[in-house]
Image (cartoon, rainbow, N blue to C red):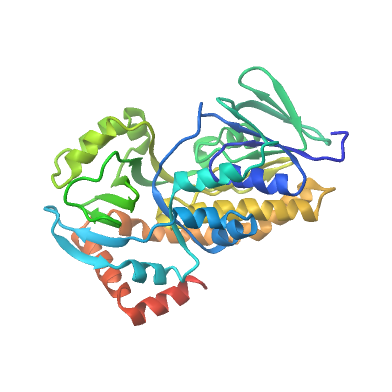
Length: 386
């Protein structure tokens, strides 16, 4: 590149991309951050930041900001009429995660990260990459407005359907491991009547699951997941029609939720799939987060590994400043076993999220009821850390 200052193009301004931009700027790189959407997305589903993600947040100095957004919630499981089946109290759920865990909205994590990214990081919304070329000295990216950008490194943090992955790795849809589910999540204007405050309330008819998270401070979100033989067809049909078709026969608060879906300005809606790529880097192009491995919401660790992986990428590049491909090789070798382990866990946990049969529902309920017992919680929390 002809300069002692390294430059990176980061594609995608979600959790993985923002963490990467923050980490690389922190080690002295110039960063250009590209986001396909015309503006920042808000809301999103509730998740837990734990393990390596929690450690990365602490190292990056954003943990205080995230703690301000943290919410404690009971987990309530109900019948079709809203009658309570059982409860997993907030303190038991927290103990299961072994402490050092934060419950957050995806959008809240992105808010805190975006605020932490220095002003001298250039952010362009409504922009993406249409072609990528590499040589020994760097990588050249042509953007959709016809402009060309050159850098030492290009980071694809653009999610499950990554354009960077398609352009630089030539793998196409074959890397998608479809798990046979469709998921939707969106913020609510108001909490439906009769639902508990500061709780996640879940109803699971066969092959489907509906959860409403009440997060305090007048914040609430809905989460739908169902088994699907054609997730791509669901995506083509869109969230309103798909959810109306699959959940329109249900009572409880479902009609209220579907009514609010029509007015929301931000919906996460996609098939549930993992990425089974044999490599995450090629020359000076690297994939991070869902673009590389995608654990799926079933893992409970997707955001955490995105942050941990981006943080570790900065560490690897700082350790090998003169040899970017070598740094990427070392980074992937260290991170891949953890990603593989959590992908396996996610596949095994699928039936816990949308039980298809009565036996699967009873098994899920038994495990969660058992987890609420203090001795069992202690053992499970210990196992989750090993």
